[in-house]
Image (cartoon, rainbow, N blue to C red; front, side, top):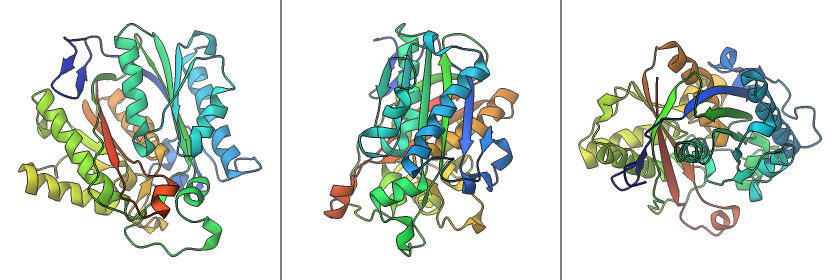
Length: 336
């Protein structure tokens, strides 16, 4: 392990694991956005043919896992681990999904930073020799998450302009020790950062400091700068958090991130779709990564990508009690 750890928080893989396949399922609003024609499956039914929003989300994740295995020609029996995450209490969507597969399961909660964390753990298992093939999956649903963390959609709560909309959908990817595809070359696991933000509608303000902390640590650990990457993309800071990250980088670190910095929460929707500052949710970064960005990496229009998925680690209880929102960001470096 000593020869793979870099600095304080980064692991650099000696034999980089490969993302050999991915599958995305997008909800109604996401399907109408700028990436709509890039998703593997688009649904116009928010219930996804199920009796509840929670069952709809679970079915989406199950379908995403089944379809990525079909796409890569793999059978569940030959997958070493399934690593999954969602936003609901006790990651119940992931638990129900895992019950449908004969695969050892690692359920993780890291809020909206799940895409990076699940992929990082999968890569460490593979590079460490503990697995050959790992499926990672994430999901979220606007109607299930909003009523758990904020207010039921039916309540008609007026949201402030800096609020974001939880994305609906599911995504899965197969990460392996051999095959064709972009490689996960390193990961930087984040620290929990709490700056006193208490507004559950303003996730960007809570998460931007965590994103900066992880980005700076990543560059310090492996002696790189922003120019190394074609694109540095955060998970779901939204318009306000995205600008705050740029401002914090400039003011606190004398670092200019404007040229190659993007955000999945902004990329997922058009401005006229009524999502205010942009998207959020576990699947927000996964839908963008495993559709548009994955294709660009495979086709060569992107060569080096740093995904910094961000998560607000509050609970409904802590939110209702007015407690500050702890946040985290995990980064994975993906290269051709």
